[in-house]
Image 1 (cartoon, rainbow, N blue to C red):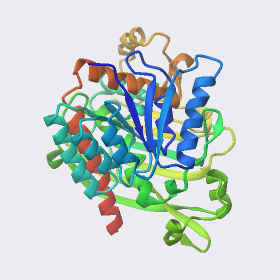
Image 2 (cartoon, one colour):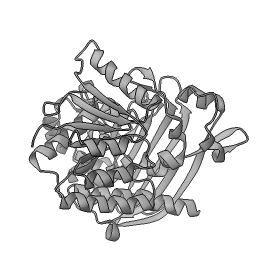
Image 3 (cartoon, rainbow, N blue to C red):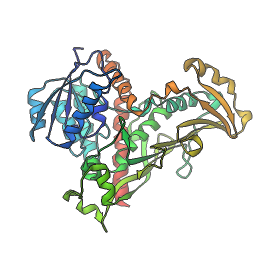
Image 4 (spheres, rainbow, N blue to C red):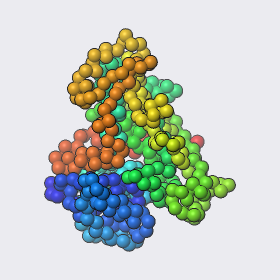
Length: 425
């Protein structure tokens, strides 16, 4: 296709900048940005300028900025690019997606693309319209590029080691994925300043429809590789719940740089604490497999730690477990834990060593630890370039797998339906 030209719309989340942490051969260095004037925009521009001015491998982005309350209408009217990047306030994101598709943009959107069932229905229509107009609508699933997750998936496809994925039950799922996140964190070497609307579930979305998007995506991607998932037949929510993380005014100020809570958060303040519904758990059945995903948020990680991920896939011969606790020095680590060691033919690991040179097995108490060379651990921020390169490949070659769109639809059905159920509890 012709040269790709990014247009960034109202970049309120730092992920919008991370898409531009690298340059891409077929992407024009001129990026048109349309946004409301304010801190969100200035922080975004500062991050891009930081990438442009860094000593090692600086980027060459040229920002052309339009500031105004009518930023979206101006973006649509001028249409100065062909790929719209969306990563910011989620309250109107699905509306923006639907309108952008209608106006002929490809859309490259950060999760979540829908934060409630009404948004989901609009999103489903947008996918249908994108197909009619031969446009691409794609979300940024960085976690598919994390090496331990990749190897967990690879090992689950080796019957001599894993056996077959178990079906599980609601009380003992075949697949469990849990993530722990923190409001106070470092991005690109600096303490992240979060926009105050990030703490408003009407603008950001509750945790059960936000971060769990990644976890639901990984369940689908690992358990049903290259398979189409139809939400109307293949997804059943067993139960869902949500709960708050409580923040003091001082904690809120530390990450937003605001001395007081905005008026739009007043309904979420009880006894001088901001109660944010950022935590959630979904128990569901996908095809014939029982799965559980959960996300929890704390204010700040203990010293020396950060966001953590825990994941289990239970097979007939062994479980594949990713842990990131104190024992692992808070580094994601993959284990093979057999039901009985005699059941596992560990020689079947050898072809994987050729595919991923340098990986090894180390015998541990419960089985084996997968040793992964440091070079494979590129970090969360680098995954944005990897996803973007995949998106560009799909645009160029028209080779997006047939399962991607129905599985994106199934993913957002799962999260938004779970929220609806959790809110009724």
